[in-house]
Image (spheres, rainbow, N blue to C red):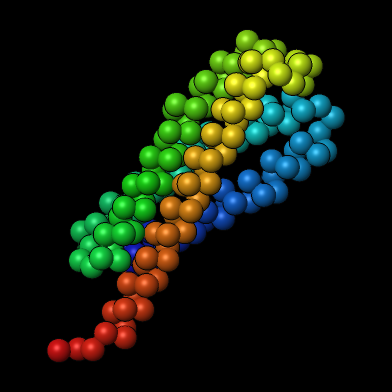
Length: 160
C-alpha cells in the first residue's frame, strides 16, 4: 500500500510539473497582455511546484526505504534524493536570486538592452531554474521506472 501511495504522489507531481512546464507557462506568456504579468503568474506557481516536489520526493523516500532491498530500490531512493535536491536548489537558491534581480530591474525586463549584464544574468538564472526543474522531473521518472523494474524483476525472478 505504501508503494502505491508513493507512486500515486510521484505520478501526480510529475504530471503537474510537466503540465505547468509544457502548457501553463507557455500559455501565460502567449495570452497575457504583458510579459511582466506572465512572469508574475509563473513566479507565483513555481514555488508550489518546487515545494510540493520536495515534499513528495521526501515522503516517497520515507515510505519506500523501510522496504528497500534490491538495487532497483536503491536506485529509486537515489532518484528521489536527486528530485528533492533539485527542487530545493531551484526554490531556495535560484528563485531568490531571480526575485532579487527582478526587483532591481523593474517590471519590464525586455526594455533593457539584450546585452545588458543584468538582463543576461536574469536569462541565465531562468535557464538554470528550468534546468533544475527538468532534473527533478527526470529523477521522478527514474524513480517510477525503478519501481516498475523492481516489480517486474520480482514477478519474473525464479523462486528458490
